[in-house]
Amino acid sequence: MYAPKVGEIKAVIHRPLEGTPKNLTISKTRTGKYFASIQCEIEIPDPAPKNGAVGIDLGLTHFATLSTKERIDNPRHLKKSEKKLQRLQRQLSHKVKGSRGREKARVQLSRQHEKVANQRRDFLHKTSRKLVDAYGFIAIEDLNVGGMVKNHHLAKHISDAGWSEFGRMLTYKGRWYGSWVEKNDRFAASSKECHVCGFKNKTLQLSDREWDCPQCGTHHHRDDNASINILKWSRAGVARRNAGGEDGRPPANRSRQPSMKPEAQPLRVG
Image (cartoon, one colour):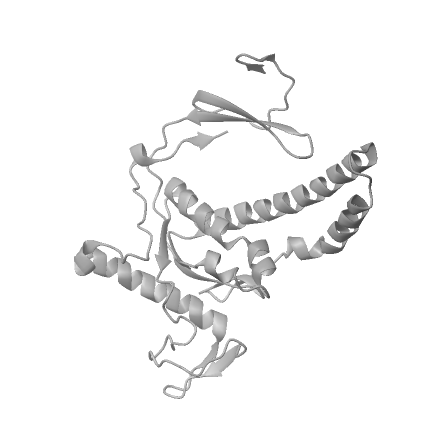
């Protein structure tokens, strides 16, 4: 591969380039690996419409619970590697500063952190693409992750789940492949309201995983009920906006769905 101002570079091209190359970015990781990212401009045709709708409730016990009652397990990549990371961190702390042994230990620790990050990113990419391919309308929660990680008891687990990155991936992949991604109001009590009759269980605690509606008698699993409500409320919000309600605009705390026009599509990165 030829890079301007650098010359010929030995590179492993993992897939052929599409479209017109615009720029090249070469980056180096803390483990000494080099990566070349080539940004290409291509014309993306209008995606074919898809049927099917799903609501998604994100959590820690399960990464996601769908309104179809399907559950996606939380892989917990950081937790699985925690003991190895602790051992490598201890080895690094025992090395003499400035020595070759310390640099070698630092690289080993960085490689393990890099592996965890790659595992998490791979899981999020595959999960988001699977959902976008299967459903034409996807409703998710507009979570305040920045505020949630202030809870020191759950911060590590919330960060390991990657909810914010998952929502970002769903949004741009939805634009590329023809799925509408709608973010539900973060302040809506999706777990506490019965999706059948609308009764609000104000006494429901976070530890209560299942409950019975005293008004209609429906037995609810907390996450299943939340995902169904997220889908129902998001559909209702879109219908109101299409009918001219709410001034035709989403609430201030809800993200606007990006344009589906081809000229508004972002550049793909090869």
